[in-house]
Amino acid sequence: MVEKLLKGPTRYYLWLLSLLVFIGVAGTAYIYQLRTGLGVTGMSRDVSWGLYISQFTYFVGVAASAVMLVLPAYFHHYKKFKRMIIFGEFMAISAVVMCMLFIVADMGQPQRMLNVILHPTPNSVMFFDMLVLFGYLVLNVLIGWVTLEAERLDVEPPYWVKYLVYLSIIWAFSIHTVTAFLYAGLPGRHLWLTAVLAGRFLASAFCSGPAILLLLVLAVKRMTGFDPGQDALKTLTKIITYAMCINVFLFFCEVFTAFYSGIPGHQHPLVFLFAGHDGHMSWVTPWMWACGCLAFASLALLIPPALRDNMNILPWALAMLIAASWIDKGLGLIIGGFSPNVFETLTPYAPTGSEILITLGVYAVGLLILSLLWKIAIGVKKEAGTFELH
Image 1 (cartoon, rainbow, N blue to C red):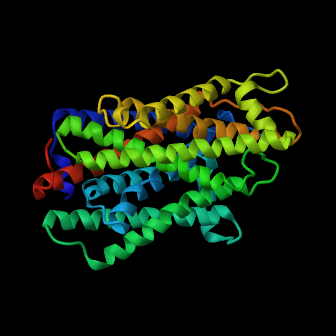
Image 2: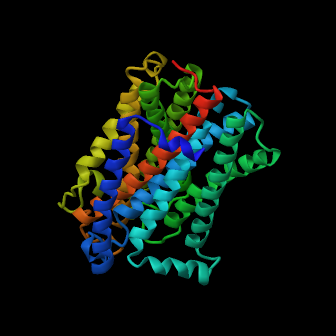
Image 3: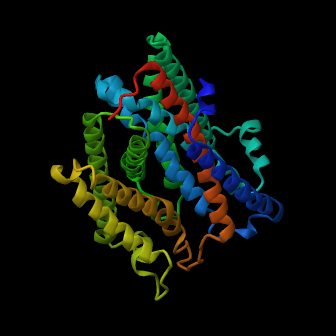
């Protein structure tokens, strides 16, 4: 199936070349960080997690979101998702690889990651996070490749694949739950110290991840004519809408708990994110207000069926939802967790140019892997006659 990568239009090769060039430029920035140290980032003693960890957190959710296709197809026999499942599994592979690269970038000295393997500590949440991420990557590679090969040969996948699929469904919930425990188990960080953080993570993942997948599938449909099926698109859009409603509801549960209880420590991070602290306004405040506006605007377009099913409006609604969830989880979560600190003082944090360039380089690696895997999937579907044109 790898030979499918060698056939494509000129724009396909130009796209791959542009990604490789950008990865090379970002790689130079990473080598500079590796030689100079994490001092080139905006992180400090008081703010020990920054843009890298926020993106790691976000893309763990994107990886876990493949379960929103797999679960209905295998548990509820919703066959209309079968045409898109392979794209979700391959997106999960690229997302997990990105997560691992963000951890490498954040470690400063990547060889330190060997300590997790050479000196395992089962009481460490990071140890389990590494295990579940690597396990999820292996599961998606095996399931995706074997099922695609079976589709190419026009045969049923081996019986053992179904058991791996069932395991991957449980595993998908575990990877983001364990990631939430990395935050929720830290005392003194009031924004994170909440029992519903895992629920918020999963709700955010199950709306933003499928939204990204759906936008990409719509782009592939426009470029190649691949039709995932109108019923499948409508069903996935409903799942996205419900998940986003739950995500917003859980956020307001946090707001109610913080302000009705009158506990200052729980109020300060939220006040800081939306109004600053002690007269100090943060650069992230306008982003958080934009997040709120985008979240409500996306729901206004997704909840009414007439607007949700309109293929001209849907991409805009999905884009707004993705932007809102990225700001909330990719910026507000980290900055709000560290500000104010345990001494009720502020240590400003803003990502530097090096951080942003390296982050964009990891994005480029993810897009490269995704492009290659989806190219193989589309080629196999065309060869097998399962590539239905719109």
